[in-house]
Length: 441
Image (cartoon, rainbow, N blue to C red; front, side, top):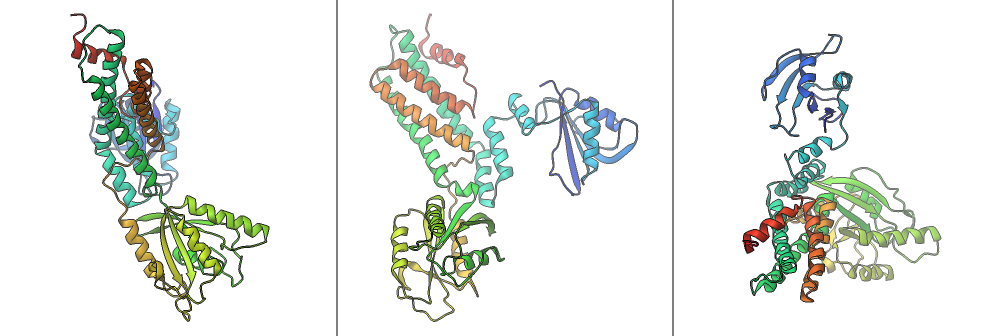
């Protein structure tokens, strides 16, 4: 932590402004050598920047943040100079010559966490906000930044610490009187907190498409217009369109945006009975994409009568719990499809217009926001699951009066939550013991 670090804080490339940030004990020293000017804390100072030989580099706005009132909690100097590939690189080179070290990914945020400027949970949330792929994802992550999630997880952690104090007291000080309804209170606490953590985990897993971007699979029998639909949604010809069945033999995946939503769409091989080994492999991948997707676009051909292959796809879709849009394509041709009014078909023609599908899909995506607490970090999602499972195991052990093992499981749950809230200190247990039971009067 004694090293002074430096990094480019803006995206690499051409732009109006580049920001180079320095943090550490020697940040101010380096800033003074580059600017040859006094820098007052938290004042934007217009400076000329010079290299070690005294040659002019650029003009910039320089701001000095004196520790601990900075992002990292250390001395920080921020150079706001003209954007581009060259100027910021020259400044970085000069700072490295002065003795700065190039920051590792996430090192500024890591120092902020170590110095108590932010929690690990907030650091993860900020990173997720930066990487969010849609307006809806940004909205959900921003809600987490308001502190409700941190407050809830910290409350659960404190409940567990207090309970652990009760239990360890009963183990170590068996002669002390404990409240008669203590066991019932602990059981209730375990049930409620395990349920909350499991609900957060379940909702986060179920709705992770809101954060990561929804996966959409296009399925149907051969020659119903799946590849044409993919091309229409992407607005360019990504897939080969052919009148011959079995042209698409592998899955094709592409990203696109619909409104404010980020989507990953998968065009699959036509599902039918085939003796071709390669085509059979493609059909197996098509069926797997049904399991992996969040939304299914089931495409049928309006210009042909329903056949056995259509009915097989109906049966396949009945087994899926995913959101399904039933699409009747080629509606610009003579309609021969008998079951046009079933399944609330969306009628389109990929040759002419798919607005009806795009509108229906966007309207559905717009309704997927939730007021419940959702997690965007995979590590935090799994920590909630692990903590919930440990609490449930602890409750069962409490029912069996296995207090030592109960305390062990509770410690596991506390450790999982402490990764994102507050490091567990054994003094917390002592505080609870003495405040509630006045041991050793």
